[in-house]
Length: 573
Ligand code: GLU
Image (tube, rainbow, N blue to C red; front, top):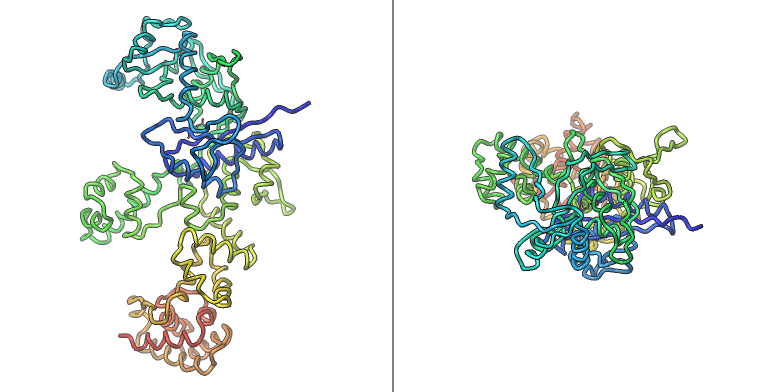
């Protein structure tokens, strides 16, 4: 006997980047299908029925992010040629399926379960406002001439004659029960859902309608999605119960539903793009507090924004991500990562992201030999052990610190060669200018820098910060004025000169230990603390006060180079 096939789908709306919560949904759908082995299929469908907000560019970005994460799909758009749907049940872009939806709209009309409605947007707005004034939620009142189960010829004739209209679904009078594999049975009372729109005035289906038609025609057996869609589900179930197929008359099936926990920040707020705005706003406010001369107008000028935009942003009436991004540079704000793309750019590893995402609401429920929960695993493990039963009901917490430490652990566990490869690939994509300089280095120098940097890298991007001092030409080191003022005092300069003299005596190939010994000797001979020598030297060599241990820092650029830099530093002034 062949077990029942399992078909899951990830159905993003292409209105922006892939959100980290969307990636979790895709991952769980993928894992559930893969768990079923050859019986499972995972599909991608692009829900681009919102014409104004959807773009091919966004669809492409989402597919690329999924591919980067290693989430592979069996059916769906072809990456690199996204206009073309692949294989059996496409097209996979809803905008290319309008004739199918129209066929089903008409079908529902004939069944007497859908009817054209002619109220204008203004009329509906007024009704909505009137309801709000009475503190009620607006429910569309079914017109008296609409009788469910009867084809409404007069209305369909007006629609066919070209009168602007939407099409609404006649909700059944009884309440709706939704069986959810995670939340159990969820009941919706009669009348809770009104006669909602299934086809918009522009001829496009609404999300509710397209999703039900496609899940049926594409053979989707399991719908795994975020809990925010739970309230949509009674609409979908009601439609499924009203619909039969136009090819053979079979009733629509209701897939298994599993609504996954929401993802919250550690501070309890829902994780969203708004977090970027929050971070930028807080940073700007702090900067204005510190410097009273910094007015919104000045901030706007620095960020290349309109003054009114900054005022709105500060007042919290706008949370535009573009504003947050424009402010980030000039005010040195580290915007929190929210989308998969942000994590890619920050130098996180895809296998770490998927491991971490898998734990947002699911856990393998296994202990390692030392009694700890098993938390680190790869995609194959996830596919092997994934089940809906182990998805929790409570909100998931997005712990950035833990994610970063997972990433650091993964970097630490790599071989030098692997780390080097991964860094190069990343840098080619995200920091091509740096990548060019990096490739131009001689191999032994590059290896030395890699070894120096790796223990200090939590992300691939960190490498740039750590090795930057070694990548600039000796003549181009910029000495930070604050660091110079603090450490290159007369005794500091004196210590630096003494260090240089002893370093020269060590010869060109001195190693880190020998160089550290020189620092110690210079400190000892002047009865100074180690830092009173090390910091002036660090400023002289790197221009700043932060670098790996001094011996390694000097060894990484070589003695000759170090001496040239110190010379320049001592002459500057
Ligand atoms: N297009 C919907 C979204 O992006 C899909 C919801 C669903 O999975 O049904 O949220």
